[in-house]
Image 1 (cartoon, rainbow, N blue to C red):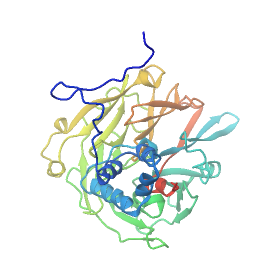
Image 2: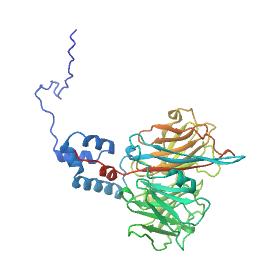
Image 3: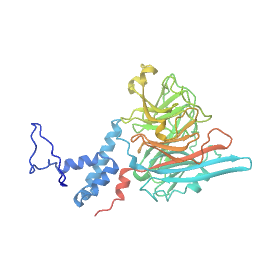
Image 4: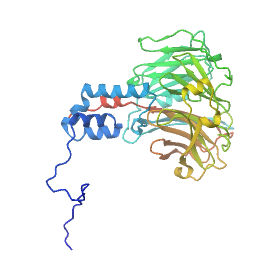
Length: 417
């Protein structure tokens, strides 16, 4: 038998094989660049490494402008580009223990493979030992000093270490978790929302350099508005740029359209927490967006993590014409066996944080530890098994910051050939 390898040859539509001289199909270079612009970060960087002309075109300002336009169109049209795992930078977390002879804590960081040193400017030991994470978005983290209610918060840039001190507004006391409404590329600017009783709200903007609070706004409340507020560290979800969603324990979801100054009360899926082992003081699920930008709720059931996605249109929600049973559809996101530690039966699962750019979800699972998985790849990883107890006297608190970046910031670090 000859050792010469045969080359497979495809066939045309008429059943004949193409000749060896058949040229490869030609694609105009501008069409190739359009394909690159719609790709994820990892694909874009691989393409940029193929040749000098390609890399030059990707680094050109016209291409970057096209990227920004596509992102703006996706956000304005209530469409979301696919989650990009390459935008995940890592985690900073602290396990705090209470024993009879005192309190102990362990602080650690996990940096994504290939991103070593990217979090060197974020001093996790100093910050997490004195401050509590309240919110995060992109490369920014909102921190509040332990044991305080209305003191200043600090907005820390994970990439640069820059700290912005934000004093509390005079006329609104934060009853709902603080929320980052908008974050510029690389954390260059941000807006911070504070909402109080009856969703009375103010927005802090850093865009003028010094930073200032805007006017107090009292939004219109729906007839079925409820006064139950979220857990103080329950992460909010922002859709369509200015619509903030809070999971208010088992009562329902409050959606606040900051631009229109209007609120909506959304009922939860019927019996969505029926197969959940509850932990005192923690949410039974976490709000995330679907691939097409719709409101979704992740829930850890006995053997799976499921996603409930809102199917009603915005107009139906506001009019209240659709019943709770027809608003939601359910699908299984990940089997518990994918985590490699059996199922969730008899175990408490606490959702901690979600990264909207990378699709990273973090969980604290009893007898397993700190886990993260990705909504796009459906891959799970046990980050740490140092603390596997939840809701016992030996464990009091897990604090975690999720760090992400954005494509323009990654491209700034790309060097020409």
